Amino acid sequence: MQDRFLFIPVFFEGLASFLSPCVLPLIPAYMTYLTGQSMEAMIEDQKSRKTLIINSLAFILGFTVVFVLMGAAATKIGSYLLRHQHLIRRISAVLIIFFGLFHAGWIPIRFLNYERRLQVRRKKQGLLTSLLIGMGFSVGWTPCIGPILTSVLLLAANTQTLGSGMLLLAVYALGLGLPFFLLAVGIRYLSKYLSLLNKHMGVIKKISGIILIIIGILIYFNVFARLAYL
Image 1 (tube, rainbow, N blue to C red):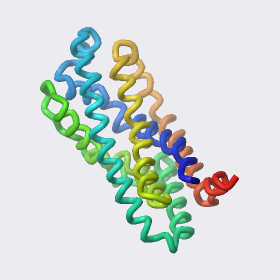
Image 2 (cartoon, rainbow, N blue to C red):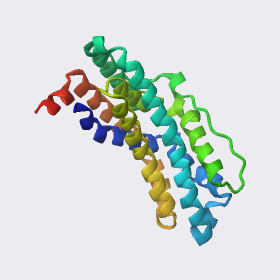
Image 3 (tube, helix red, strand yellow):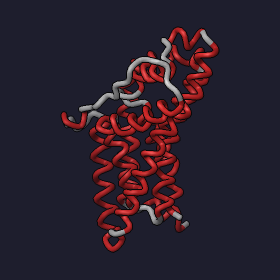
Image 4 (cartoon, one colour):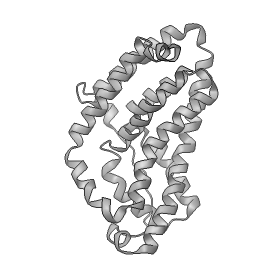
């Protein structure tokens, strides 16, 4: 029952991953990979925009499948640790707070800033290729979105059922994928705002880090379980 209270913060963690400095600035590049067209062509040509919308759905599905499988694995592992669930919950909370401090820039850790970029040749992609790019996205960018993703996996490991853990990662993928899809649909009108978001990346990182810290504190004091009881 208490797992449902995690959906909203986990959705915002997905949104924070989209706004991270290793994802947001490269959204135009990924859109180029998915269509084989320049940003200018996608803005002006209706056929290119239609291709972008269709392929972006396959792209989002690709990383959603991988994240949901991660959630299933985390939940399965967590089911063997139920006898120590209170200790695990506190350790998970401390780690989430730690990742929040790192993401906000208050604890510098060099190796967590490393990233692996997905290399894709610039040509027109089909649905299957877009799906595979999405799966590669979920794996290739994990070192960069790792602090946020790890916190969600820790939450999944503490859920009560396998389905809850998988659903939690699906909600995270929704938070990450929804703004990407909306940007693909409204690229003619929204592309100019990407540069504005990039200018405020420091503030965005701090806000998402603070959200992680708050979630960690709530988990440590078992607030979500108390809300479920009420």
